Image (cartoon, rainbow, N blue to C red):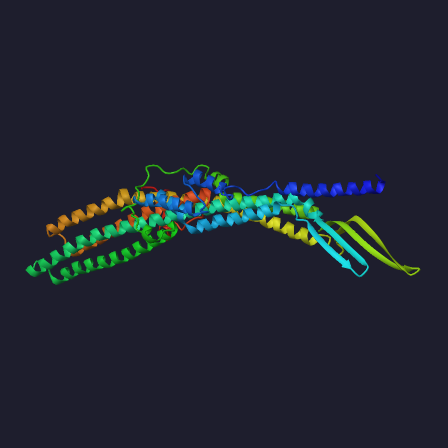
Length: 494
């Protein structure tokens, strides 16, 4: 074997080795069997005790529908409502699909660059030239591990954002559930109050016919009855609106929306959660913080890669093979002679960009500012998480004290006042106006007590969201301010 042939064989082996390494690297990364849903499933099970399922076919959809129908056979609880929402809400399924898109991007960025093959043919009557070329981006190949690591961090961030979507849906479903049940309870109470007022109004009418009650007192009884009717109508509107909001969270339609709700809110717990280490727990468990940490890690790796490759933007290695055939026709002593010459040439070609006008300063500055922005966002979120945890606990404790105050102090006193007023009215010691005022005050106190208990359960949901993620709720516009004021006062006397 000649020296020239030996060198050519060596180059071909190196080229084949490079291609083989490229193919080997390409086979190292593949799609996960669960579509990247493992983080969301772990968080849902650990924090909620619920399952999340990505619907990918008709069999899974049928199984989920069967499971939902079984849950709907009984009156909904807060836990069953959350489970139904996690199974049926299409917005959450869209979040799972977006996670699949993120995983596809991760896989795409983890693959080595595809080789480019070009063929050219030049020919004439006596000449033929064929050139074959295979190009591989050496820059992309050399930076493949770094780019794969960056893509992995971004995919991990997307996984935690999907987990946050699960927690957000669960929290919002609980809020709407408590609002819907509270609306039911208010309607039931208003119906009872209206029935009592109707009886009193009818009695006032009969007393008026006998002359025992003057027209002014009769009018006051009738007005009170009519006013309660208007309040009941308003409560029924709120009841239907709250139910529709809950239906949207559950993702139900058709016959499934005919579910049953309990007639009253759950009782207040005997003990409430402690505020000890609440900020530390929030910082450790918040999924949005973990997503931002992965974003920051990806940005830091991107900054390092940009800084390391600032002078090189692209290198392409091309393996070329050239085949040339030339025919020479000559006439010698009247005879035509044709000579053929064939040439096979092989070689390598490297192309790269010379950074004359930009030595990478623009890219490095861009990467640095992007990294600092991500770092500042993470720091800001950490500060906000601490404050959100403290605020959520303040609302939670304040609403508990407020609801307990209504339950143990206000309502018993209102009942005693009304009982005493009835006794005095029977003894003709007070007129009907005082009786109506006391009844109206008791109705308002009962409605406020229902709202206070509703706000406590919503505040408990907000506290959970502040600790694990999922977004803080309103906590009730009026009830929140009252609860904060009560908590600021230490709940003394409740």
